Length: 621
Image (cartoon, rainbow, N blue to C red; front, side, top):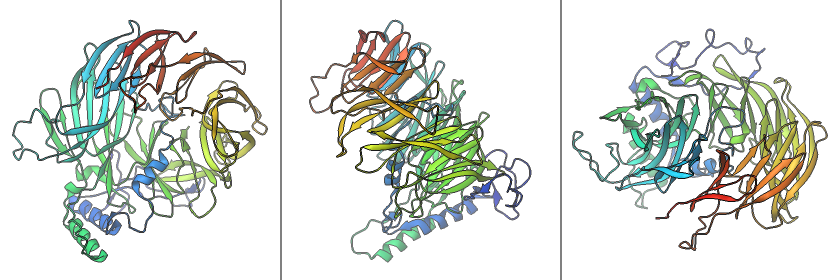
């Protein structure tokens, strides 16, 4: 179970609530802290038998004749995940208002650029502008890698990937590991894999870690990285021959669940410490659930110290939840799980990650509605600000901001601003300390509305002002002196893209913000703001990069004006006619040069002239 557990309930069920001073207060005792928004508390178990009984009960209640989620439920987990992650991670590489660094396929520490391309890790020295290292990350067997991401800390890189393990495994646990496979004895299925790589000289793998499931998120805070793994419950349901009734199918599935062991839920893992392999499984004493658990999946949090030369077991803890959104701020980890039912609730779990090692569970709560995007959550000075849509999908769109904090095991609402943007779709959100900015838009209208929210008093947040805007803004970036930079598109009345656009918003008087549009591009291309790293702004020089579908525009922002320095392009790959590999999707400043990355190569340009000074092709296989 999580560290710091304190028992406040009698009986065999042990509560996992972390209490700061005694057991949970009554609602009257908490009235000065805010209005409780109680969610399902996480609870641990005295034995695997108790955990298994709870999981079987939850899964049997949630299963339908066609699998998890009832056949009449229009929402699926895949739909929900795509809905919540449509805007992708923050382009800065860290979460706004936090210190939690996000993984990406390209990272730099200023001295070197590390990227993953076609299953190879490549290292580029930013001074010599040459590739200094290359490392193959995958084997040649029957494991199909589908995604790579990495984090840097000193001379260490952590690579996170997942793959699908196919085929039969050696029956003898002591049998040699086949050389043509990803070294594993884990059961077939989805496998998350972490690699610890030494970058001090020629890149080399120091240690490996593999666990059943999918890597959903990773956050680096200080020297500790936490990796969140989603593991789907595994059952061997009988095949549907098309003859069985709906009731028969349901009864068959419930019978399988009733006979399932703990292996169906708690993931197994293994790690290589550089000399030998070790195996393990998340223990029932490290697992907790809630009364709203579905039994369809578990979330496992792994914690690794990146200053070490070897992986250990990851100090794993698991909860019966699905990590739809993850946010790190103020030494807290927040996990949000949106309900798949039509009540549209979001359960929020708060953990303490101030120290190394596994997270400590602090509090839980539940708010109506779903967050529109990852940017809808923001932690600041111990508060969590959350923007959600209507809980009732049959109502017209409207948005609510809630200010929350954990108090003695329960998340309480200290303040709320409701009915923002009635009948308007949320386009962009940006928090900046004690203010929040929302841009909304009515469907098939070429005007947007910019709302400024004053959050100085967590108990009385308010709308400080709003203004109408032309076009569409997809990303907001803070500038000095109370200004905002907006990146988006010029739009026609018929909702067609006319061309990219940069806007400047003067927010010094929130009740009457002013807008200027110092840069537009007259071409029908979209601004590529949805990729991590596609947008860059350097406050010291005013250097600004905006990537469109076709090219990267190198700009300079000075005194409210945007001047064009030049255009950066990568050569086309003549061998590939159906795919556009030369689209620039990453840019960064390192060692006095602007570096850009596409699938055909890496380029260095002079940021004052846009002149190319280095080109490193990435051969396609």
